[in-house]
Length: 291
Image (cartoon, rainbow, N blue to C red; front, side):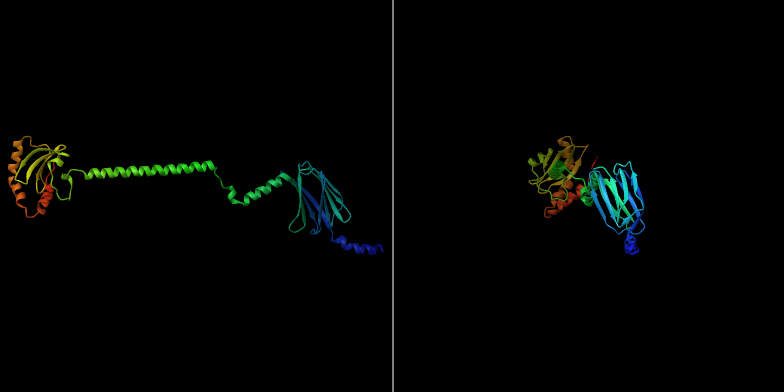
Protein backbone atom coordinates (compact mmCIF):
# COMPACT_ATOMS: atom_id res chain seq x y z
CA UNK A 1 0.00 0.00 0.00
CA UNK A 2 2.80 2.46 0.85
CA UNK A 3 4.48 1.73 -2.44
CA UNK A 4 1.28 2.50 -4.33
CA UNK A 5 0.95 5.80 -2.45
CA UNK A 6 4.50 6.75 -3.37
CA UNK A 7 3.80 5.92 -6.99
CA UNK A 8 0.81 8.29 -6.99
CA UNK A 9 2.79 11.06 -5.24
CA UNK A 10 5.81 10.71 -7.55
CA UNK A 11 4.35 12.88 -10.40
CA UNK A 12 3.58 15.62 -7.89
CA UNK A 13 7.14 15.47 -6.58
CA UNK A 14 8.60 15.50 -10.10
CA UNK A 15 6.49 18.57 -11.08
CA UNK A 16 7.92 20.71 -8.26
CA UNK A 17 10.85 23.02 -9.14
CA UNK A 18 13.86 22.69 -6.91
CA UNK A 19 15.65 25.80 -5.65
CA UNK A 20 19.32 25.48 -6.52
CA UNK A 21 20.67 28.77 -5.16
CA UNK A 22 19.84 32.30 -4.13
CA UNK A 23 21.86 35.52 -4.30
CA UNK A 24 21.31 38.87 -2.63
CA UNK A 25 22.26 42.14 -4.32
CA UNK A 26 22.24 45.21 -2.11
CA UNK A 27 22.02 48.51 -4.02
CA UNK A 28 21.75 52.10 -2.90
CA UNK A 29 18.12 52.31 -4.01
CA UNK A 30 16.94 48.68 -3.61
CA UNK A 31 17.76 45.15 -2.51
CA UNK A 32 17.22 42.17 -4.83
CA UNK A 33 17.03 38.47 -3.98
CA UNK A 34 17.59 36.23 -7.03
CA UNK A 35 16.36 32.60 -6.67
CA UNK A 36 17.45 30.01 -9.27
CA UNK A 37 15.46 26.82 -10.09
CA UNK A 38 16.53 23.58 -11.78
CA UNK A 39 13.45 23.66 -14.06
CA UNK A 40 11.25 26.52 -15.27
CA UNK A 41 9.19 27.63 -12.31
CA UNK A 42 5.46 27.41 -13.11
CA UNK A 43 4.02 27.70 -9.64
CA UNK A 44 2.09 30.58 -8.12
CA UNK A 45 3.39 33.26 -5.79
CA UNK A 46 1.33 34.36 -2.80
CA UNK A 47 2.17 37.21 -0.48
CA UNK A 48 1.14 38.35 2.98
CA UNK A 49 2.46 41.42 4.76
CA UNK A 50 2.75 42.35 8.40
CA UNK A 51 4.24 45.42 10.05
CA UNK A 52 7.86 44.30 9.81
CA UNK A 53 7.72 41.15 7.69
CA UNK A 54 6.77 40.11 4.18
CA UNK A 55 5.88 36.40 3.81
CA UNK A 56 6.10 34.96 0.29
CA UNK A 57 4.65 31.54 -0.49
CA UNK A 58 6.13 29.76 -3.54
CA UNK A 59 3.87 26.86 -4.51
CA UNK A 60 5.36 23.91 -6.40
CA UNK A 61 8.83 24.87 -5.23
CA UNK A 62 11.09 22.96 -2.84
CA UNK A 63 14.43 23.46 -1.13
CA UNK A 64 16.59 20.87 0.64
CA UNK A 65 17.09 22.81 3.87
CA UNK A 66 16.26 26.12 5.51
CA UNK A 67 18.39 29.14 4.61
CA UNK A 68 18.85 32.25 6.79
CA UNK A 69 20.77 35.39 5.85
CA UNK A 70 21.13 38.55 7.95
CA UNK A 71 21.89 41.78 6.12
CA UNK A 72 22.89 45.36 6.89
CA UNK A 73 20.79 46.77 4.04
CA UNK A 74 18.39 49.61 4.73
CA UNK A 75 15.74 47.83 2.64
CA UNK A 76 16.15 44.24 3.87
CA UNK A 77 17.22 43.19 7.38
CA UNK A 78 17.14 39.41 6.91
CA UNK A 79 15.87 36.70 4.54
CA UNK A 80 14.73 33.24 5.71
CA UNK A 81 13.86 30.48 3.20
CA UNK A 82 11.96 27.53 4.74
CA UNK A 83 10.92 24.22 3.17
CA UNK A 84 7.22 23.52 3.74
CA UNK A 85 4.88 20.73 2.71
CA UNK A 86 4.18 21.27 -0.99
CA UNK A 87 5.65 24.77 -1.11
CA UNK A 88 8.55 26.97 0.00
CA UNK A 89 8.11 29.94 2.31
CA UNK A 90 10.29 33.04 2.15
CA UNK A 91 10.18 35.37 5.16
CA UNK A 92 11.76 38.82 4.70
CA UNK A 93 12.32 41.20 7.62
CA UNK A 94 11.98 44.73 6.29
CA UNK A 95 11.35 48.29 7.50
CA UNK A 96 7.83 49.69 7.27
CA UNK A 97 8.45 51.93 4.24
CA UNK A 98 9.48 49.18 1.82
CA UNK A 99 7.70 48.10 -1.32
CA UNK A 100 7.89 44.46 -2.49
CA UNK A 101 7.76 43.21 -6.09
CA UNK A 102 8.26 39.67 -7.48
CA UNK A 103 9.01 38.89 -11.14
CA UNK A 104 10.22 35.88 -13.15
CA UNK A 105 13.00 35.88 -15.71
CA UNK A 106 12.14 35.42 -19.38
CA UNK A 107 12.99 31.67 -19.29
CA UNK A 108 11.28 31.15 -15.87
CA UNK A 109 14.47 29.63 -14.45
CA UNK A 110 14.85 32.57 -12.11
CA UNK A 111 12.70 34.58 -9.70
CA UNK A 112 13.56 38.08 -8.52
CA UNK A 113 12.28 39.45 -5.21
CA UNK A 114 12.83 43.21 -5.12
CA UNK A 115 12.61 45.38 -2.01
CA UNK A 116 12.61 49.14 -2.68
CA UNK A 117 11.39 52.26 -0.88
CA UNK A 118 7.80 53.31 -1.52
CA UNK A 119 8.74 56.97 -1.96
CA UNK A 120 11.26 56.07 -4.66
CA UNK A 121 8.56 54.14 -6.51
CA UNK A 122 6.20 57.10 -6.43
CA UNK A 123 8.94 59.44 -7.63
CA UNK A 124 9.76 57.04 -10.46
CA UNK A 125 6.11 57.01 -11.59
CA UNK A 126 6.04 60.80 -11.51
CA UNK A 127 9.30 60.93 -13.51
CA UNK A 128 7.87 58.54 -16.12
CA UNK A 129 4.73 60.65 -16.47
CA UNK A 130 6.84 63.78 -16.90
CA UNK A 131 9.10 62.18 -19.51
CA UNK A 132 6.10 60.85 -21.45
CA UNK A 133 5.11 64.42 -22.24
CA UNK A 134 7.96 66.12 -24.21
CA UNK A 135 6.28 69.49 -23.96
CA UNK A 136 6.69 69.46 -20.17
CA UNK A 137 10.46 69.95 -20.60
CA UNK A 138 10.01 73.16 -22.51
CA UNK A 139 10.67 76.35 -20.52
CA UNK A 140 7.65 78.52 -19.83
CA UNK A 141 7.54 82.24 -19.38
CA UNK A 142 5.67 84.08 -16.72
CA UNK A 143 2.73 86.21 -17.70
CA UNK A 144 4.48 89.37 -16.50
CA UNK A 145 7.53 88.69 -18.68
CA UNK A 146 5.36 88.03 -21.76
CA UNK A 147 3.42 91.25 -21.16
CA UNK A 148 6.68 93.21 -20.80
CA UNK A 149 8.03 91.77 -24.06
CA UNK A 150 4.77 92.70 -25.78
CA UNK A 151 5.05 96.33 -24.69
CA UNK A 152 8.70 96.45 -25.76
CA UNK A 153 7.78 95.27 -29.28
CA UNK A 154 4.97 97.84 -29.52
CA UNK A 155 7.33 100.63 -28.40
CA UNK A 156 9.95 99.61 -31.00
CA UNK A 157 7.29 99.68 -33.74
CA UNK A 158 6.10 103.15 -32.72
CA UNK A 159 9.67 104.50 -32.64
CA UNK A 160 10.33 103.00 -36.08
CA UNK A 161 7.20 104.66 -37.50
CA UNK A 162 8.23 108.05 -36.06
CA UNK A 163 11.74 107.73 -37.54
CA UNK A 164 10.30 106.90 -40.97
CA UNK A 165 7.92 109.86 -40.72
CA UNK A 166 10.78 112.26 -39.87
CA UNK A 167 12.92 110.91 -42.73
CA UNK A 168 10.04 111.36 -45.16
CA UNK A 169 9.37 114.88 -43.89
CA UNK A 170 13.03 115.84 -44.24
CA UNK A 171 13.20 114.41 -47.77
CA UNK A 172 10.07 116.37 -48.73
CA UNK A 173 11.58 119.58 -47.31
CA UNK A 174 14.81 119.09 -49.28
CA UNK A 175 12.81 118.44 -52.45
CA UNK A 176 10.77 121.62 -51.95
CA UNK A 177 13.92 123.65 -51.36
CA UNK A 178 15.40 122.27 -54.56
CA UNK A 179 12.29 123.17 -56.50
CA UNK A 180 12.34 126.71 -55.08
CA UNK A 181 15.81 127.55 -56.43
CA UNK A 182 16.26 130.47 -58.81
CA UNK A 183 15.06 129.95 -62.35
CA UNK A 184 18.67 130.54 -63.45
CA UNK A 185 19.62 127.03 -62.23
CA UNK A 186 16.67 125.07 -63.65
CA UNK A 187 17.56 122.80 -66.52
CA UNK A 188 15.40 121.53 -69.36
CA UNK A 189 12.57 123.96 -68.54
CA UNK A 190 11.38 126.84 -70.74
CA UNK A 191 12.32 130.29 -69.43
CA UNK A 192 9.41 132.23 -67.93
CA UNK A 193 9.01 136.01 -67.91
CA UNK A 194 10.65 137.50 -64.83
CA UNK A 195 9.76 140.68 -63.03
CA UNK A 196 11.88 142.79 -60.80
CA UNK A 197 9.73 141.88 -57.77
CA UNK A 198 10.17 138.09 -57.90
CA UNK A 199 13.88 138.41 -58.86
CA UNK A 200 14.62 140.53 -55.80
CA UNK A 201 13.24 137.78 -53.56
CA UNK A 202 16.31 135.65 -54.35
CA UNK A 203 18.83 137.90 -56.15
CA UNK A 204 19.72 141.60 -56.29
CA UNK A 205 19.93 143.82 -59.39
CA UNK A 206 23.28 145.53 -59.83
CA UNK A 207 22.71 147.30 -63.19
CA UNK A 208 19.84 147.48 -65.67
CA UNK A 209 19.37 149.01 -69.16
CA UNK A 210 16.38 149.02 -71.52
CA UNK A 211 17.09 147.78 -75.04
CA UNK A 212 13.61 148.39 -76.46
CA UNK A 213 10.03 148.59 -75.26
CA UNK A 214 9.87 144.88 -74.32
CA UNK A 215 13.48 143.88 -73.58
CA UNK A 216 16.15 144.98 -71.17
CA UNK A 217 19.54 143.75 -70.01
CA UNK A 218 20.05 143.18 -66.28
CA UNK A 219 23.16 142.43 -64.17
CA UNK A 220 22.03 140.18 -61.28
CA UNK A 221 24.02 139.36 -58.15
CA UNK A 222 23.50 135.98 -56.54
CA UNK A 223 25.83 134.82 -53.74
CA UNK A 224 29.38 135.70 -54.87
CA UNK A 225 28.62 135.63 -58.60
CA UNK A 226 27.00 138.04 -61.12
CA UNK A 227 24.87 137.09 -64.14
CA UNK A 228 24.23 139.06 -67.31
CA UNK A 229 20.66 138.29 -68.42
CA UNK A 230 18.51 139.43 -71.34
CA UNK A 231 14.97 139.79 -69.97
CA UNK A 232 11.78 140.40 -71.88
CA UNK A 233 9.82 138.15 -74.20
CA UNK A 234 12.56 135.59 -73.51
CA UNK A 235 14.96 135.23 -70.56
CA UNK A 236 18.45 134.45 -71.80
CA UNK A 237 21.64 134.04 -69.78
CA UNK A 238 24.36 135.93 -71.60
CA UNK A 239 27.34 135.61 -69.28
CA UNK A 240 28.53 134.87 -65.77
CA UNK A 241 31.07 136.80 -63.69
CA UNK A 242 32.92 135.79 -60.55
CA UNK A 243 36.09 137.78 -59.91
CA UNK A 244 35.88 140.33 -62.76
CA UNK A 245 32.46 141.80 -61.96
CA UNK A 246 31.63 145.23 -63.43
CA UNK A 247 31.93 147.74 -60.63
CA UNK A 248 30.36 150.85 -62.23
CA UNK A 249 27.63 151.73 -64.67
CA UNK A 250 30.30 152.60 -67.25
CA UNK A 251 31.74 149.05 -66.95
CA UNK A 252 28.24 147.73 -67.51
CA UNK A 253 27.77 149.96 -70.60
CA UNK A 254 31.12 148.77 -71.95
CA UNK A 255 30.04 145.14 -71.66
CA UNK A 256 26.80 145.92 -73.52
CA UNK A 257 28.67 147.68 -76.35
CA UNK A 258 31.01 144.69 -76.67
CA UNK A 259 27.97 142.40 -76.93
CA UNK A 260 25.92 144.67 -79.18
CA UNK A 261 26.11 142.30 -82.13
CA UNK A 262 25.16 139.32 -79.99
CA UNK A 263 22.15 141.16 -78.55
CA UNK A 264 20.97 142.12 -82.01
CA UNK A 265 21.05 138.50 -83.08
CA UNK A 266 18.91 137.42 -80.10
CA UNK A 267 16.39 140.23 -80.62
CA UNK A 268 16.10 139.73 -84.37
CA UNK A 269 14.76 136.19 -84.11
CA UNK A 270 11.15 136.73 -83.01
CA UNK A 271 9.22 134.53 -85.40
CA UNK A 272 10.70 131.35 -83.83
CA UNK A 273 9.77 131.42 -80.17
CA UNK A 274 11.63 128.23 -79.38
CA UNK A 275 15.02 129.37 -80.74
CA UNK A 276 15.85 131.81 -77.88
CA UNK A 277 15.38 128.99 -75.45
CA UNK A 278 17.61 126.72 -77.54
CA UNK A 279 20.16 129.52 -77.83
CA UNK A 280 20.00 130.03 -74.10
CA UNK A 281 20.72 126.34 -73.51
CA UNK A 282 23.62 126.35 -75.96
CA UNK A 283 24.94 129.59 -74.48
CA UNK A 284 24.69 128.28 -70.93
CA UNK A 285 26.45 125.09 -71.95
CA UNK A 286 29.27 126.93 -73.71
CA UNK A 287 30.09 129.33 -70.86
CA UNK A 288 33.33 128.47 -69.13
CA UNK A 289 32.60 128.93 -65.43
CA UNK A 290 35.43 130.14 -63.30
CA UNK A 291 36.15 128.53 -59.96
